Length: 101
Image (cartoon, rainbow, N blue to C red):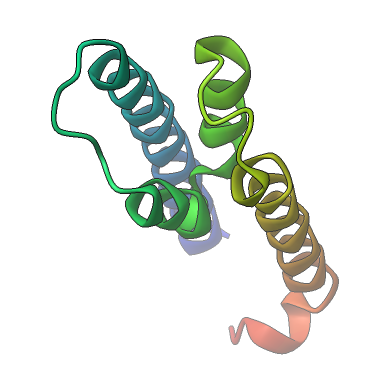
């Protein structure tokens, strides 16, 4: 039981951290867009969503009003989040078969 708890805490900390970073990356990129500065590549912003920051990306899009006209963000980020929810659901459903011990 103790190992499962530590594993869960690690995942929650990772999820919170990557979503916070992703959210601020969208804000930084918005600021750079307004000030004619070097921008964060779109692929980089999307990869942060793929690696777990999809909630932070969605919040960044909504709050910063950033990338709202780009389909790869307005449709892609929610699709990434949906895929992540499905994967997490499958992992929870099949956890007894996946986790040994």
